[in-house]
Length: 254
Image (cartoon, rainbow, N blue to C red; front, side, top):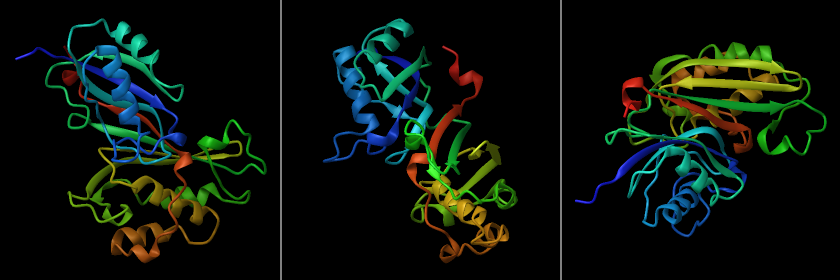
């Protein structure tokens, strides 16, 4: 059997022009497709890349983690620089490291952190607009923080998923914080896993609570009842970034 050598990489991308992470039929530009094409050109063989999690169309990443196997042993810096020279400008590998043969980017992940950014500016700067969602000037971050306080814990978050997931919808949110930075309001989520659409659905509700359309207690009511009719419109993809993925140290040792 041909030997393969496993690598772990941090992957960053601007999601604006990608149709999400996963390769899809008749959708040529996904992050996975672009990365696998670059890896195959670098390695001279087809390469499969597995991510810590799938991001939807338009969602960005600073710290997505992937693993892949190459046909021969290469220095991590050689892999990083070689693949980056092939990737388009909206995707990069900031870090590459050798990984144990059994390392799995998705199954071994301990936690993920997502950041959602809104701007209350009257005029959003062009260089910022691809990475923030607009929020009305008078939106109250204190109301958003009061609503977010209901979220941490281990529970069924299926009500916030795009559709009722076939897998177990129970997740643990370690923390949800609301921060103000000038005109920006930011929501930072840390948890052991996230259902598809979960963060954007929560952020859509947080934004409407900040605007005063619903009281902060609406978040608690949704968690208790699972009533999807209480939800707001899902927040735009542009404001969401996968910041980082954490792993047990033992799983990173080669």
